[in-house]
Length: 397
Image 1 (cartoon, rainbow, N blue to C red):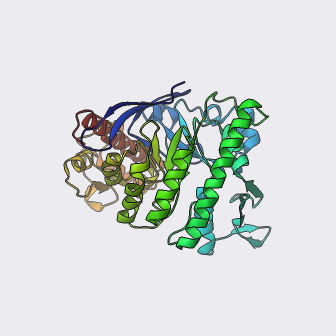
Image 2: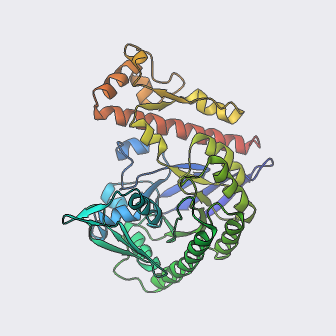
Image 3: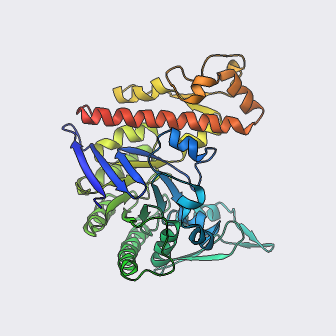
């Protein structure tokens, strides 16, 4: 199977059109990847996901291993079968939880186990990480090898190598140590995946015959480390490359710098994913640096707060007009506004429901409101990416 093909390269930037081919379908890139951390894009059914023409979604290994657990995933034949996903999936390795759960500890939000306070991240060393489940406090050991086994059981089409996502602002010394650890873990992930391919164990998922591993570039906010990491990770020749450790507290300017530092090192013949980044301005700016896929929780997260994207304002970003593109249906001004949520959008939410009705749903905390706005916001994101692909094809980006 040919995993990735570049179909067109822009004459104006590093932007490109490509196709990612998986057992569960083909992804046209650049693409936005909605986050479905626990095996669900919050608030949406699989039928709605299909209707939105979402191409690829993102699930999280740590959360799926803690619940429903590897045994259930294996019995079901992977998360595709369990959740009835019909689209390709991408899985995180659990490495991001090194950062996010440790941050919870730092803020003194700790897991309560049998009436005692226990740290969520118990230990990080060269072998791996010992976590505690956020659900029941049980210890979970993540090593490069177990992360690979867990992701095989999950059955996502694209897997991430186990890495350490450093906190912000980490020192140069600690960031370098974490980067070197990430590099060693990547080599172990590759070795374990190669051995597993030759001698499948009971971890083997029934969900997919082909799972493609991405190495992750780290290095924090330090230019020398980012370049060093990019050189190392790209040289390992994994099927894809991801850029990690961004959007963890640094400014947008710092995040963009981290991407620009590594852009010259990115491969021409393999897909590149930017982890945890996907606001409208991020996507518009960073496709020009050769980024093919973006994952982000924001469209559905803000939807659950009553924030609706506005199509015309979002598409205006492609023309350099960068104003607000959010409408807050909670505002009293919309209480009796019977006009569509977004007159430039033809999604089912906008065709069928008014601002007044959505205002009512959110004021009454009706769950339908979360679904309708999540559906709409993802529809707008799909429209944006479709237009980006058209513009790249016409060498306008």
